Image 1 (spheres, helix red, strand yellow):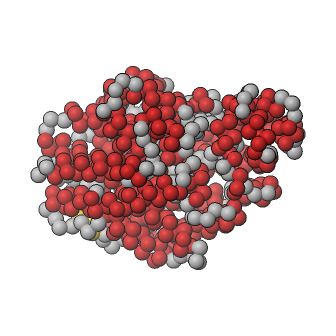
Image 2 (image 1 turned 45 degrees about the vertical axis):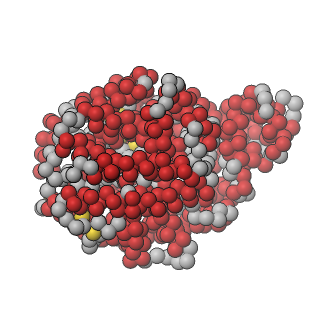
Image 3 (image 1 turned 30 degrees about the vertical axis):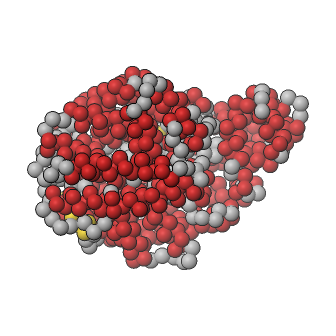
Length: 638
């Protein structure tokens, strides 16, 4: 349920906008509903009220719109002219008089091409997300990606040549004058320099990505979208079956788990092949580029030091007994059991009615929570509702889960959710709107410097979620409802911190073992069970079939090692929220300054005004302690 993320390398990041369209926190699938399921859906729709659908006309009016083709032709023409004018000449420009002016003009031209190409690719990706089962949309998506890859391949020389300019010469040009504006971006791309290959190799890597990793990503997406799960005589989609894990009836949850396991098992060979192929593809790339650790390329993309991530992972794993193990033992007691079955892990508390929350109530709740913090924050979020920037209904073929896609600075973000009226759906809406606010604020930095590293990209989303949770909790007077709400938040935080670090551990084990040879389905399943046992603890019984549940997590496919960013963001926001609660006036201004920085500053520089430092091992304990305090509060509600 998190934002779409792309590579920070310019122009190539535009390709990533399409290739990473399925970077979701919790994958759920939507496809054709059976007639009886549609009837049930119609009943629920009446409770939810009218749900908004996005209007993509702010990008283009249609897949065959003349203005879209005109923009593509313009980008192709401008790219060719850019190559003719600058290829092989950047070092000379850097050494010439008025180097700052010449190079700034060059970068600005490149940025304009990047923005226009990004607009096209964003539109293609969002159209495809609207219905991944539609053959016409799939073809449009694929053809757009192919055509854009050719443009990106031609422009690949630019950042490679910039990185071959002597550091002292480029630093002098960027010290002042027009090029100084782009200094953060230049510093950023030069971090890639040690892992940069010869130009033709880079070109091959880029062009082959469409038929290599990109093709396997697409196979995963389309396979997952087409899966059907037998449930009480009906063939349901993944989205519909996963929703049943929130049912009050334990038998329903059990049947849902068995349904998932049966279908996943039938398709285990395909998912095993995809996982093996992509892990090998990454190993080849890492080896050629000189990355030592399996996750180093992700750390570089996130602009975070390996030791910072290692400290986070160590702190969370050490906290498993205090957090997940302790909470699930408490929850098992609430259910009158020694152990919870794995299908009960996120079950609603017994004897507490789950209210369906209409869309308008969800909207007002989030906007009120944002407004209590800052009218400016609420005003930005309100645009998403008023200007049709949100797509909320569950539809046949619609992309699963939720995301916020920033498109390009010359346009505006879009948010996709699959709204079913559960309290968690309200939190998801708050989360994605947090991303949207962040993306709007960062857009002023332009196409090259607006994108934020993943480690900070979750800050606004999780903060928005926390604001909304606090508002909802403050409104509840019934003790049972308050307990249920607090328990739900603890579960969300455990899912975001503990579960994501377990996912990271699983990925590390898979990629390390794949370097020794191809993995069997049984090996992958056993690795999955081992990390789940460690993270969930003895109070969760991992029943038969659960060993296959790794198959539906899209981050393992689309964005290797993406997952730790959620734990990073959650712990960071817990610390940030503690500062907010005890802050004097001026916190909101500092907060907006941090979001507005986009990708122009390192995490250490952005957190300094709040007195926070992610390199300090004690930093992570602050965030983890907040979760622990909530568990203690729940224990006191016995």
